[in-house]
Image (tube, rainbow, N blue to C red; front, top):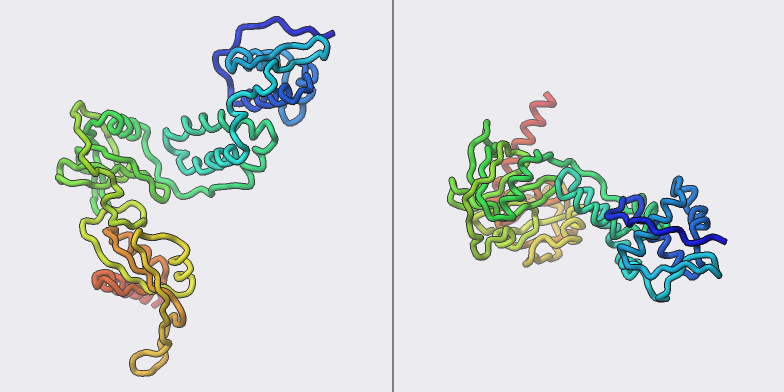
Amino acid sequence: MEMEQEKKPARLNITKAALPRIYRIDEEIASGKYPNTRTLKEMFQGDWGKVSISTIIRDIDFLRDTFRAPIKYSALHRGYYYTEKTYRIPAGFTGAENMLALGMAKSILSLYHETPLYNASISLLESITAPLAASGNRDWLENRIVVPKTAAAKVQNEIWEAIIAGLKENRVITFDYRGRWDEDHKSRRVRPYQLLFDSGAWFLYGFSEERKSVRVFSLSRMKNALLTKDRFSLPPNYSYTNLTGGSYFGVFIGMEEYHFAIDCFGEAELYATERQWAEDQKIRKIKRKNTSGNGAPETGVSGNGVCLEFKSTQYDKVLEWVLSRGQYAIPRKPKRLVDDWIREIKEMAQNVSRETK
């Protein structure tokens, strides 16, 4: 007859590899099958790798001492059971759908792989979603729900450390920064308000003491970041979202609000209508004639489309959006957008002309 093993000191911590195994043991004991160390060892062969009886004993001790699991050994049934029939370890109370949602969050975390946030976050989710591995669902989840990698801008660890500390303690930070049009780095002194993420890049939104106004800084363009002893208080309504004019075009701060109107045809029509681009966005059906003013056939797109209208302060981002849709997006308002669109197209045409001569 197999006897319950002598209790050993419980582990104070546990490895990621052990968590799925412990959840599986909990499942077996709760099922009423009266598993023992031998049957559990047999169950853990194959995909689980080599699992010894001593390892299983430590897992059971961890269940009993850390989760306060009411485990007893039945000499009659030669196996373990719960004295409280309804007991399950804490994560066992989480619904299957919630577990799958948390597992999907692990895939989304891959977007933040190059940041200090990743390791801490992934460790927490690994511990919570361990039942997925125990039930055999992890392979399905990790291989069938995928977040493709994007081109990410790398950030130095010392930059992260200074900014995180500045955000946490409301302390001014200094750093050298190279702006979009700068040839070299320049010294900056900033009160950090928020971290922003957009299209594979991280940005710091804060108050620039040199410019006496809020600015956005790309973390990948910083160097020599230092945390000062100077503290500051967050102003009312400091959030970045208060400065976008209610539109959703990523990270960009504009000081002037515009009323935009953009005609969209073909694939741009679908792209415009399937997403919410601004809080006040309006979409109306339009039809573009296929003749010019003098009755001659007009080149380019024609037919049914939509006019997308909204207000926004994110001018540069909207211009990028229009240009990215190619011939299928035609700006109507404001005049500045129309003029810049025409200028960009003419310059591209000149490039084409030079390159094809």
